[in-house]
Length: 141
Image (cartoon, rainbow, N blue to C red; front, side, top):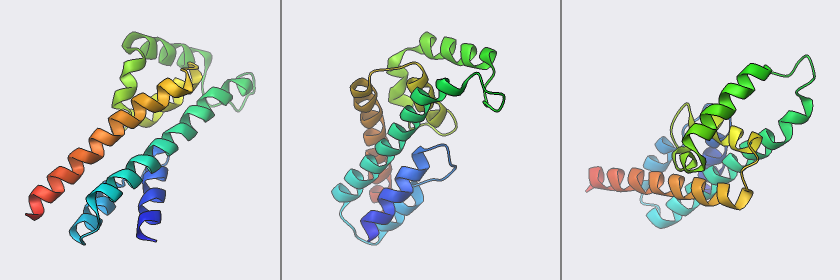
């Protein structure tokens, strides 16, 4: 149940909802849970949540002609220019607060290949969680 809670928290934190999974991860480390399993679960949940963003971005353009569509053509063009400027490797920074979630969304809009998306996002997020675990364990011992 503990690992499922971390998975769900990490999943939601990667979507466009504001939530942080690092506090729960650190708490579970303090309680003595397996660092490797926590890393694996948090990375998996967070990466899967980003995949939801990618999918939503990929599908959202079908409604761009509707009045209720949340982005203007100018906003979409600006976001696409920014994404193209920094390229697909910018997905390594999908773990960053504030910019990471929209980055994964616009990767879908830009139709980045899914396998490429998953590899880059998972790599960045796995390194971030490894760092959080290392820092937390360093503070414990």
